[in-house]
Length: 367
Image (cartoon, rainbow, N blue to C red; front, top):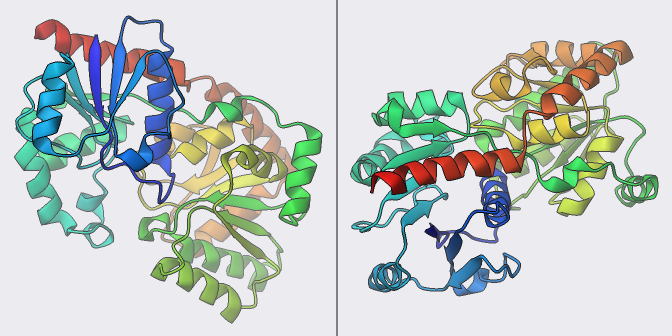
C-alpha cells in the first residue's frame, strides 16, 4: 500500500492539536507492521520535522503539475489530506481527508472567511472525497449536518495524547520544571492557543469571582503558543494587570513538549473552558497523567472526558467559579483521578492508526 500524505500547508508557526495528530498518526502508521510506504509531501523547510524511517519517503514539491506527476511516478494507491483545507483538484487516485471540526459553522466570526466562504470551499472539494475521517462522534454529526457530506462516508476515530504522557516524569524532572517556571504548590492549568473559542476571558473572570466573591485563591497557569500581536493574548495580559491578578495567573507561553507532562503532574487539575472542540487533546493528556478535569459542557468535550470531569456552562463565569471551587475538595479530585485512570485506557495512537488503516483499506479495496 503506497500512501501519499499531503502536508504542504503544514507550518512551524505553532504546534497545536492538528499538528500533534499528524505527527503521532504518521509515526504509528509507519510502525504498524503493515506492508505500506508513506510518501510525505512537504515544503523544503519542513522536510526534517519527521525522523528518518524506512517506510517514510519525503517529497518536496509544490507545483500542482509536479504533484500530479509525482503521484503517478510513485504509483500511489491513496491520497491522504490530514490538514484542514489542503485539497488539490483532479487527484487521480482515491482521496481521504481528515476534517477535525467545523468551527466556522458554529462561530463564523472566529474563523477567517466566516461561514459562507469556508462552506463554498468544502462544497467545491467534498465530491472528490472517497472518505472523511474526523476525530469524534460530535464532529461526525456536525460535518454531516453542516457540510452535507453523507454520514456513511464519515468515520470518527479518536486520537490520543503524545506518547510522552504515558510515562510518569521522574521526581527530579518535575522539581526542575517547577523551579524553572516558579510554580506554586497548587494550581489549575489551561494549555491552549490564544484563539477566541478558547474562552480565556470568561476563565479570567471566574478566577476574579473566586477571589472577590468567595475569597478563594486559585493560582492559574496558562500555556500555549502566543502571537504577541494577537488581540486575545493582549486582552489576557491587560485583564490580569487591570485586576491585579499577577500573583494569581502565570502566562508561560509555548512550553517544550518534554516539559508538559511535568506541568500537568505538578498541577491540581486541568481547567478547560473552550466553547467548541472537535476533540481536545489536553483532555486526554490530563487523563493519561491522572489529573482531575473541570471543563466546558460544549462540543466534543463531554464525549472525551466522560465521567472523569466536572462540567460547567462556559458562557457563565459564575458557574465556572463555583465548579472550580468544588474541585478544590481533595475527595472529589481523588474520585476523578480514578475515573480518569480508567477512561485513559480508551485512547491510544496504536488504536488510532489501526482504525485509520481500516478506512484506507476499504477505499483501496473498492478501487
